[in-house]
Amino acid sequence: MIKNIFYSIIYSSLVIYIYVFYLNPFFNYLGFEINRDIYPNLFLIIFFSVLPILFYKAFPKVSNVISVIIYVLLYVPTVATFGLAFKGPDLELLNVFIVFFASMVLLFYSSRLNFKHKKSKIKNQISIYHILIVTTLFVLYFVIRFSNTMNFVSWGEEMYELRNINSKLGTDLIARYLTGWLVYVFFPVLFVYGLIYKKYLFCYLTIIYTILMYMILASKLVLLLPLIILVFYKILNKINIISFFRFSIKYLIVLSILVLVIDYFFRNDNAIVYLASLLFLRTIGNGGLLNFWYYDFFANHPFTYFSHINFINFLGNGYPYGNDGLGKVVGTYYWASDMNANANFWATDGIASSGIYGVLIISIVLFVLLIIIDNITNLNENNFSILILLPFIASLTNTSLFSSLLTGGLFINIFIFYFLKIPRGSKS
Image (cartoon, rainbow, N blue to C red; front, side, top):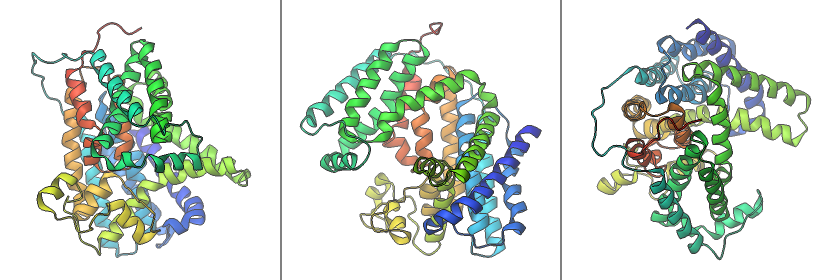
């Protein structure tokens, strides 16, 4: 507990420093404003950043990893951003802090709950070869459909040109879901299975399929996903899940300080500038920034009451912003006509749906979902489950929870966790 508190104090102080001395000077035009006196608010920011840790207890469960990542990448940056940029009265800011604090504590508590399993006659009835066959058929479908436009393009203008050429893919509902399920579910399952159980043919096939889909989607994430999974695989093999909090926050602190020092001495180097902006702007700062500006926008605009979810809007047709998605609505209002400010589940499903108290509502939904995930995965290898869920975890920090469930394929992941036959004693 003491070590966790210590690391949280250091990390929250570092996030404040990054905001004040990097994000505000260089990216003020994006909304990293400072509208409050810095020093009187330091204690308040650090206090609410650290407070949830008093209620955190590590358990060897998937929910532990997910809640820690939310704390590091969303909660602390959100508290820092509101504490420095908030324009309203102190009592309103305090209310915001309390709601986010309660939501974070709720997510931490999800790993504490245990439920007994009932044996099922149909459990473990899917083999990895069934998933391989389905994945292969899906990939073949896309290769045949886009055979005339497939191209292994470089990162840059060519990549965006290929996306435009294959833009029909984004308007085809079936194709959009299938690509999401391939990239975020089936590819990770095959690749992780091959890594953990030393069945490397699955890894090689996944890499081939990944390259083929990159030649259609022109998405960097598609191409990098096996590498990202491999890195996390190596990390998780060296640590215990119970120590994941201290490991993640400690090394993020070290990496941030290192990048800050390098950026100070080599600020004119484009590669260093890109690295610093990738870590400080996109990884650490972005979640808090979007939570803040979604709060600002929906303080004066109609809530969606979850009508931004296609299924709910189909039933009631109550979405107040026409054909524009939430990211487009907020991005156009604050930044540019072509800006799509997609945001994390607290912003889209929480603040946009019903204001600040919507954050608590969607946290309750995620709390239940984390319990379900733990209940299904705790008989499997935790590393297997965590690695497969990496795309879902990343999605939570960037998009709606409901989009992650459907387009991101979490419901398929849950199905696979329950029915997939995991080999016992085959790891080496």
